[in-house]
Amino acid sequence: MLPERKPRVIIIGAGFGGLWTARRLARSPADVTLLDRNNYHTFSPLLYQVASAELEAEDIAYPVRSIFHGQRVRFLMNEVKEIDLNARLVTTQENTYSYDYLVLAAGGANHYFGIPGAAEYTYQIKSLEHAIALRNHILYRFERAMYEKDPAIQQRMLTFAIVGGGPTGVEFTGALIELIHGPLKHDFPSLNLHQVQVIVLEASDHLLPGMPAELQGYALKRLRHMGVDVRLETPVTKITPREVTLKDGNIIPTETAVWTAGVGGDALAQSTGLPLARSGQITPLPTLQVEGHPEVYVLGDVSRIMQDNQPLPLLATVAIQQGKAVAHNLLRQMNGQEPVPFRYHDPGTLATIGRGAAVCRLWGYSFTGFPAWVLWLGVHIVNLIGFRNRLLVLVNWAWNYFFFERAIRLILPRPVRRPLLAPKSAEDKAREEEQRRKEPEGS
Ligand SMILES: Cc1cc2nc3c(=O)[nH]c(=O)nc-3n(C[C@H](O)[C@H](O)[C@H](O)COP(=O)(O)OP(=O)(O)OC[C@H]3O[C@@H](n4cnc5c(N)ncnc54)[C@H](O)[C@@H]3O)c2cc1C
Image (cartoon, rainbow, N blue to C red):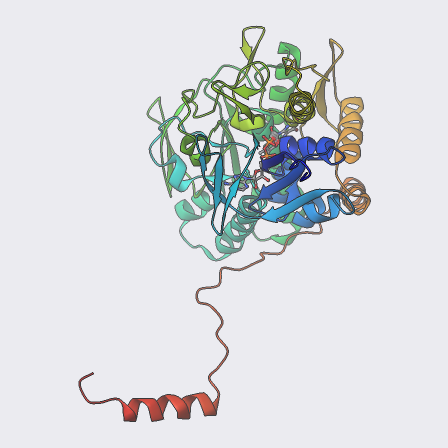
């Protein structure tokens, strides 16, 4: 008798949700394949520090193959293009794979609420490529502003608009203003940095939605104290490469609009043909399975799940707990048991606002300032993947803290306009010439 085939599990996405599912399944009898368009896992809570020249991209990413050394998880670097739920097929750029169970953990894309120009002209902080592009752009604005004679254009170059006052917007703004009034002040002594404007544009009447009012108030006071122009109840209506238009009719001339305002599902979620929420996310059942497809699980930012009449926040902590729950349910299913509903246990929330200041909500208590910041440092160091990364990040932070210095201020890579082709050898040129002569005229 032939041995029974192992159940094939495909996990799409090696972010927080997919990685934790795969880790939990690594010792299971299943045949697990993990697919990601990148060959690394990104620790996205620190992406804003790459964008603000505080950390290198390598410090917050880790190769997926290294994570699964010696374990029974097959990793394939492949971009998934389409999912056919009825045929149970996943199509990538190179191949088509069949599955018995599918875990969709592909994260979310930015949600732009239909604002004209937002998708085209804003910078994002959603991936390492985005963070590096934003860092280069900011540093380049200062280089260009040095030579600019027209004061209006120079002002536009030195104005930075951050759309969204959630945790990413607040953390990035704090790090940006410190970059400008610390290292860049010394790098560009001839620029008048009082001219620099950092503006946060938030549609609601508070920063840090979901946090207690005293923490929201602390974040607002702290950012304003640092010189940030925080504008609450200020929705954005249009964005062009040179301007941000506000609902009240005001126009902010700027070459840098950073989008941190919303997350939604992306084209992959659409390709499943499943009904999507307005944000473009998929709404799974409480067990994280998809209705009508008990073999398919959806989790993390690509999903929208209600708990106690509130949508769960889009956080790494949610995706990690869901990843573990999905692995648990898959194992139950393979053993002929019913999957169980998922419930999120909130471990607390943290957000930093520059060096030495943060807000924290833990076990029902709120606290701010230096103690919250130290806790923030500890939590992020512990959760980073890889000892080397932890060490590098710690050294960088210590350097920054004690010397007010940021080591990473290279504009790199510069855009390459054309592929670098090897120069043709004399032999190649002669062969081409010979070929041309042989070809009949007019062909
Ligand atoms: C700047 C920033 C700061 C944040 N700060 C915090 C914080 O402080 N605390 C917190 O808890 N959360 C934070 N978050 C949110 C947190 O990072 C997300 O909630 C979490 O990453 C979601 O996990 P996920 O597994 O759903 O998606 P992700 O971690 O985004 O992973 C998705 C993976 O899928 C891959 N992928 C996507 N599409 C495809 C495709 N078509 N084919 C193959 N692979 C694909 C991607 O490459 C990626 O590796 C932050 C997010 C950002 C962007």
